[in-house]
Image 1 (cartoon, rainbow, N blue to C red):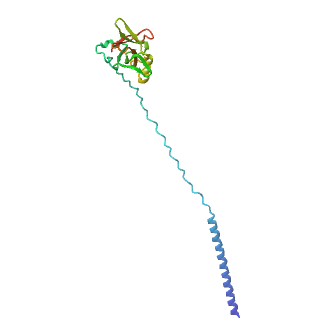
Image 2 (cartoon, one colour; image 1 turned 90 degrees about the vertical axis):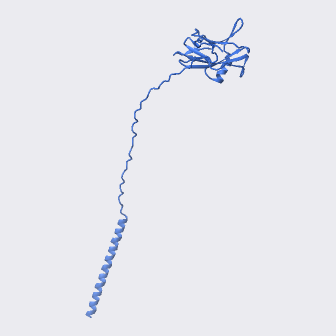
Image 3 (cartoon, rainbow, N blue to C red; image 1 turned 45 degrees about the horizontal axis):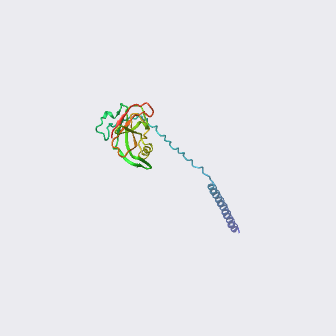
Length: 222
């Protein structure tokens, strides 16, 4: 009987030990579970980022430049030699050292210039003037006179205004009434209504006569 009590007592001790171990295991599991939950809810501080400052590059100041004054080129003026007048002396072309004139091309003749019709024929002259002074010179329509020699008289003609204006429009150059700039070359067209049989003529030029007084005079021959 005593042996049975002893065995029963040992069995009870074993059961108590097992229960204690089970309780301890449950507690350990609870601690592990709690630790996992705490770890999952742990918020890590944000990793600080390094602020990168962009390097600002300022342009270097421009190097000083030296401005050179403009150079002036002297104008080479052509010799005032007539185009088709080899017998005329060269000094006859100069207008008292103030202006020089010449004809650039052989004279032309035509009956009509567009809607402008000559009573005889139009004599077309391409004239060049060279201002030999350092001052501008005004020239007028009345400064040109075409002289036609006759047996006992001379006929004086002024430029045909409508035909001369038309030549300026279609051929260019300068208007025949104009201010000739200082030390410059100036060109214009003139049209005169002459008899068809005219073979001899001379162009008498008196700059300034339109505004009076005449500053000089010269004559061009065909």
